[in-house]
Image (cartoon, rainbow, N blue to C red; front, side, top):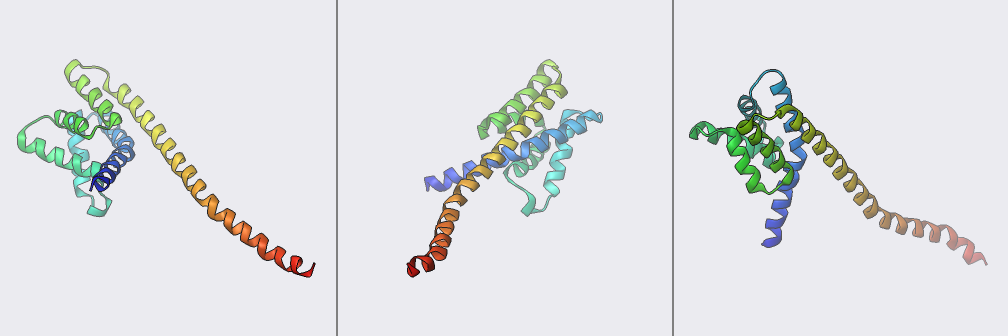
Length: 163
């Protein structure tokens, strides 16, 4: 039971980390075109809610639900996003939420900070992909070694029998 829960939490964390860079880029593009952060969240949430179920992941479903809840409750989307980031426990998501809350409360330069965060997330995503590649390489090296050993035995056996 615990391992299933642990796997689900790890998959949710991975979904967040893999989806966050694209989400931040969408947010930055919309904000750069003159849309406020609240409106940008709503537009992205609407797009996520229209995705087919097979194309949605944990992060996209949560953002869609967050937008829907903010419309029902009249709460700020940024506040809901901050609460979701705290609940998820993903530090990258928490950093992005803190940037948004800081901008809302103090008026800091949102675009620059989010762009830096987005670049860091892309770099993290790239390193995670490289790590998965290295892991796959190491998993494949053992069967490859066994095949090579079998090939050597098959080719050397006739020569050994003649001696």
